[in-house]
Image 1 (tube, rainbow, N blue to C red):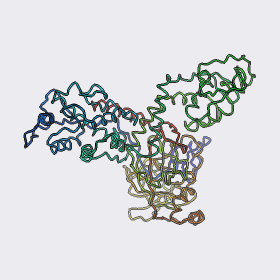
Image 2: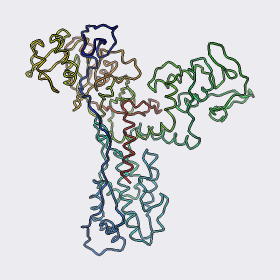
Image 3: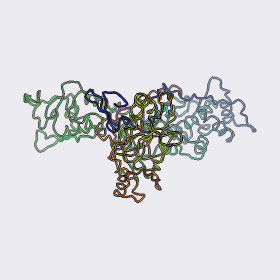
Length: 630
C-alpha cells in the first residue's frame, strides 16, 4: 500500500499506475519527494502597484531673490499651479525636492530659449524606449505633444517652461528606475518570486543628470548587460521589422494530420514559419531557366502562403491520403525529410511530443507562436531580466524552469547542460539567486512537514509500522531514532509533527546519490533522483518545488573540478554509501529563473510554454501599472 492510492505504485519519486491492485513498494513515500515542503498555497490574487505621490511641498522657499525662471521652478515645486499635480514614485519625491533646492531652483533641462541639448538627448532616448521592451509614451512629459516637440510654443511662458523642466526630471528618473529594476515589483506578483531588483539610487541619478551632457548614454548603460538580454533586444527589433514590412501571418488552418512523406498545401505556410524561426534554411528552387536560380527568401511568390502552384496536379498514392501539387520532390507543399526535421526541432522547443507528425497540438503551437505573441513574450522576459542580478558571475548555474533545463556557464560559454524536473503548478519552484556552497554525497532525505502531515500521517494512523518496513527512520526532538510503532500517531495533528521522519541514504533514496545545497528560506535545492524515466518527458513539472537533475554525477564533476575532484573520486565517495558533505572552496552562483524566452547556444531565441501562468500575471500587472502611472 502506498501513501497515495491503492491504484498507484511508486518507483523512486515517480508515480506509476498499477493494474488495479495495491502494490507494496519499498520507496512509497517518494512519489513527489522533495525537500522543499513548499505548501499547496493560494498564490496572490492580483497586483497592486505602489501609488504615485504628489511632488508638492508648500514649505519650500529660497534664501535669495530668484530670477524669473528659477522662481517659476520653485512655484512649480510648491504646487502654486493648482491646475497641475505632478506625481512621481514615493522614493523619488524627496531627492527631487532636495536636488532643485541645492541648485537654488535653477532648471536642469530648459532655458530661456526652450529645450537644451541635454534635454533633446534625453527625449530622443526615451522616445526609443520601445526598443528596450518599455513603452515610450509612459515617458512623454504632459507639457509636450510628442518627443519631437521642441517647446517653442511655450518659450515665453516661464511657468510652462518650469513645469516642463520638473516633468523631464520626473520622467528621466522613472526611466532610470524602469531600465535598472523593471516596472513591476516581482515579489508582489507571486509568492514564488524571491528576487532582489536593484533600482538606481535617485540621488545618484540626479547628480549624474546634472554632471553629464549625455543623459542618453547614462540611461542606456542602466539596461541589463547580460548577452541574453541583448539577444532578446535584437529579436524584438527583428520581429517588429517583420511586422512593419508585412501583415501578421495568417493562422495555419486546421485539417487532416500531416505525416512525413505526405503533401499538403499548408506545408508552404509551415515552411515559412520555420524559416522565420531560423529552424529551416530557405529553399533555393531551380527556375524555368536551368542556368538561373531564385532564392525563396527573395521570391515573393514562393514565400506567399496563399500561393497555388500552376504545375499540374497529380493524384498522390493512396497511403499518403491526399493530393500532391506538381513535383513533390521540389514542391513547397511536400512534407519532406528537411521539413520533418525542422518540425521535430520546433516540437522540442515547444515542449510537445517529438514525432514529426503535424497534428492539432503542433498546429496550435505554431499558431500560438505568431510574431505578435513572440513580441509580447520578449517584452515580458526583458522585464524579468531587470529583476535579476546585474552580474550573474563569471561561472554560474542557471536553471530555467519553463525550459526544464539546467546550464552551467563559464566565462560566457555553456560548459554543461542537463534536463531537470521542477515543481508542480501547485508547488512551484521559486525564482531566486543564491550560491551553491555544499555538495552532499549519499544524502538523507528529511521529509518536509507538509508531506509528513498531509501524505504520511493518514497512512501511519492505519499502519504504525509502515515506515520501518520501508526503511524510514523516526527521530524525536533530541535527534534520537525511535520505533515508529511506539508513536501514537492518532494524537498527532496540526501543521507540524513533534517528530522528524527521514530516509537514510540508499539506492531508493528520494534524493538519489547527491544533492547540491544553497541554504535558503525556501528549503529548495538541486538533487539526483532514482526516477530517471521522468527525464524522458517533454514537460517535467512533477516535484514539490526542488529541482531534480539528470546525470547528477556529471553535474557534480563540473562543480567539483575546481576543487581538485575527479570522476573516479566522486564515484568512490558515492560507492562507499556513507553520507558525506563537502563545503566548496570555489562557490558558484545559482540562478533559478522563469524565462519563457531565452537564447539557445547559438543565440537564437527559443520560446517556452508558460507552465505556471506567470506570463499572464505579469502582463496583467504591466497593464495595471500603466494605468497607475498616468
